[in-house]
Length: 395
Image (cartoon, rainbow, N blue to C red; front, side, top):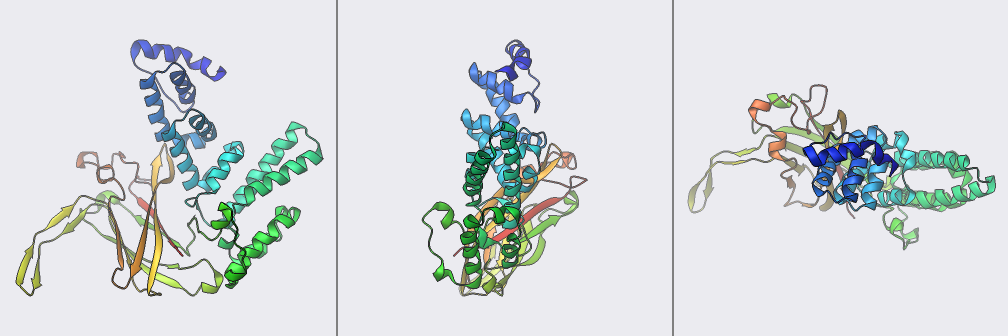
């Protein structure tokens, strides 16, 4: 391939020296050469580099080409890392020039998934409007007739927008959509879908016709929304100065339903975060046989403990998602997402997530503390642990 010619001398030098300088600009052509000539050791080096530098690729408009190549050449690890970065940092990706290059079929695969991280569904809708407008510019540049462009654009709008979950928008947002130019131009496509959203918020679920398609089943499933109604940011400052087995406690509330007619259903949560291990002190347990000594126990784990302070219903099944922020290549982003489904009852009000972050990767040895060795700390001084907790009810 032409892009491989400028790096071919580096590829040849690797055979003689065993060394090669990999950068975000040359890694893909070098990987293409390594794949073509079956140099597996070099392929592994390139794949490892790409997985660690996806945020850098995104900021330099190379994310789509990495995603496309890894799909075509079955590099599953790179593909998964790129796809996760897009899903978990969707708004920042949508603001890059590379956003217009995303293939429609690949885009659809992402939109079908529940773990897209956005402020709310309205923000996602606006991102899709921007992508469609960029595609329209590309169509215009091809020189096709206005009639053909209108037909192709209509097809693209309907293909993409059917994955927007209108019931997850508020009634006010649905009303504001009526003023949106794309809604006015394709009213016959959007009206029925927006009507489903209004019926959902009014409590008329029995009047909603079931949709057999996959996107119809997902209409009432919330994504990972970071709005205040269903999430809370948990931040620990001055991480290196906090003692071992320290507990940070947070209190917040979330809505139990996205529907407007159930907006009164709110639950309060208590979060205990143990970033530097858990210490159970020695204690004595008094039972009918006598007194038992329970020895101390220390767990080298990063634990998040979520307590339902007061059940607003007799029982509640929720999906708890923890967005873990990190810093790679100077870019702060959602690096990992941990999810757990839990059934809260009067007898079971506490849910624990252990190994939230690899303990040794967050808590580097004392000699390295403050040396920015861990990617899990963000902020100007790289001493801030930042999480976002998202709670969504499961019906």
